[in-house]
Length: 262
Image (cartoon, rainbow, N blue to C red; front, top):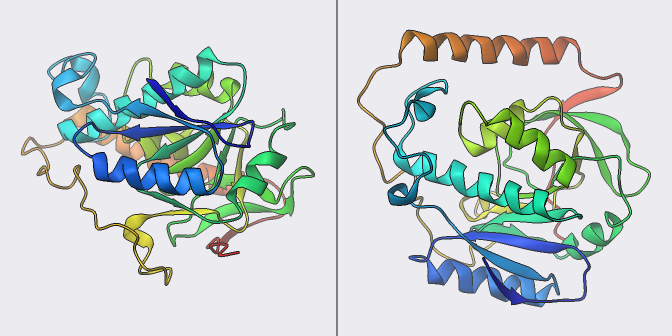
């Protein structure tokens, strides 16, 4: 991990980036410099450098067979969680296709003194989320009870990093699925949202600043069928989501979080 730039904010961003994607890193550097957000580049894990190697039983312990690119994406986020745990402050974790809105620095500045939170997602993907109605006293964010997807832009505290690392010690998963299912996290959602991925720009009415394709989707799904254990894990996960809906906090609703353009 190499230090790249420092800005006016106290909070630092970690940008997950493959060495083979310099255009994406240039795009991230440009927008982070413009927003005066300090950042480091975190070398993304590749399928050739998985830990443990791809044929270890660890990688079969999710709800379906994983692509090697999905394994690598998960391992990259796990590396970011470890980096957060090694520090004593929250970090903004970004995938290199995250588009930040102008209000992101002001929001991050307000998180500097927050200590009763483990994770805050800045992202919207145009899908409904189960969120509380009441805002946090320190920043324009609401309690996030159930998310469905998205791991491109989130703030993680060391307490949250520890809980996530404990969760994945035995079994992996898609990075966003791990975040969405971590019900022990004190998770919050920026409202309005302050980030989206490049593939959402057109839907949000934003001219895409960079043409991009998904490295994950470029690899076909494994031909192997789900094992019985994987099918049971999938069913258990869906049951947990259903129970989460029934046991949700008071004063919460499903809503699509709009993107803040200001």
